[in-house]
Length: 388
Image (cartoon, one colour):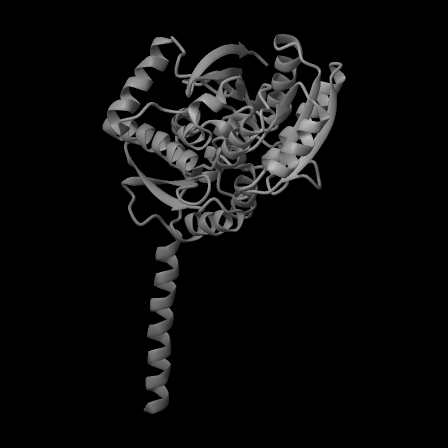
């Protein structure tokens, strides 16, 4: 009798366990489509990550108000990578294996995107990065193979670095540069290398290359060394926290030459840290300018200001664009199956995004223009648009 009881208990437990496994394999709600939002919501890059997430949320809110996608509402599942690659991998693991999202978008830091991409590839879930510009995000560094499930809606650093170099050479007419690179950032190291390559090929010379690390506070030692080399311009392809301190301390050392950077500068915090006047005679390459007079762009700016009470930065725009590109892919796939979404993303062509017509090329990168932004008295001023 006891033996039979044990058999019955084991059988019941087995049935319950199998039921749990089967339940875990499907969506918890057939009337919704789960999309993951992975972003830098806390940590050193929180302002950019928050802007990214805000843009994505706004696009999803608008889509749901219009009836959703494929007759279903989009359920956005938000995860914070805390501005750290390891946390980015952990958050992507949770989104793909526990929350069971069908796709993920977000992330602007290249290092964080690469960590997230590894998990997305392992779980075969489409990942559409927002502002991660290092080439290694979508192409495996060791094999040179394009990653099946990883895409992005932004331009990449070979283009951005060339745009910056040509601006210095051809517009500012300067040929002697120094570079300050963040050695803890794949983004900074990559963008520095591409700038250097284009700058030297264009006839410029690099007088000094100095390294720093994220969270460094005092840059006067390396700035003093750079000042002694007497460069005409300084290139700082870093993120706003360190860039703001570098610019402020450079001006305190009477280093009044132009300082140039990349899209990692684009944060209101930059002005707070550097203080407005110190940023005069500085420029950076970016994905978008709120001074764009296109009516569609201006309508977006007005809607964003109404939703969040502030002017959108480029990451907010890219987040909004990424969400809409992903939603469009789901519509074209006529399916919420990850494999079919992936195929539709790969076929994205001429999508009318706010940041410019967006086509994803053979390496899953967006082909689109860049803009040059000048800082004047703490405000961003549109300088030029550069087409690919």
